[in-house]
Image 1: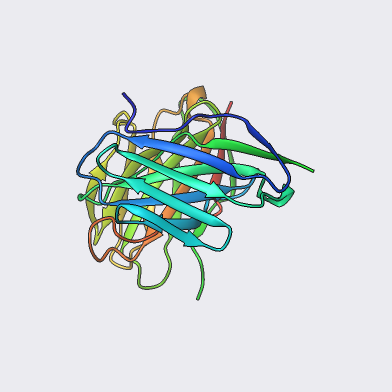
Image 2 (image 1 turned 60 degrees about the vertical axis):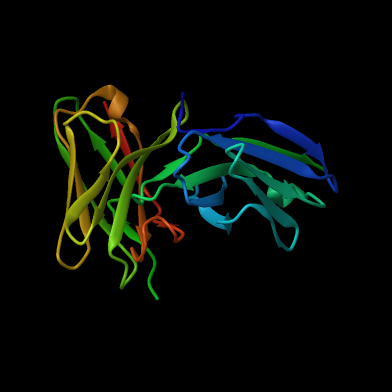
Length: 110
Length: 115
């Protein structure tokens, strides 16, 4: 079992729709959870982080964490073509190791 | 504030050779992590250094090694290169206070091609 799992996609949504990206992790001791966005040929950049169970909103982005189910998600509201990228879920354990999922490719069609 | 700097940006090596990649973290950051990114495997964790000590290690063979200097700059070495080592190698910088609680900032990566 991979430490962090994501559906590789591609996930295709029409412009203006909500994109839902999901991630599961195996280490119950994980403490911090991050979503990164990576455009083709570029390095990953942080979108959001979440530490506590529940929802955290930042503009069009909402991160959701459920530690009991070992599940993290990212919702993107009013998706734009510029949101088309690979979204990487990252999980940090209490030892500091930051592990990434394989990433989900999102395509937003105009 | 300068970002994370990786050198060189591109590298072509022959099978069997060795290579050294360099990463200068953000000023004040003490944690440097290395990742290998390939289309088939995604971002795979190699190792993390904090205050010159290897704090975490991924599941890579011993041909992959690293070190960190007192100024937090880090180097990664791959010996006896194989074709499968062709990848984008990314370095990530974190302040290091508290285990895992802070975001990682990435460099632009070194694209290694083994022929």
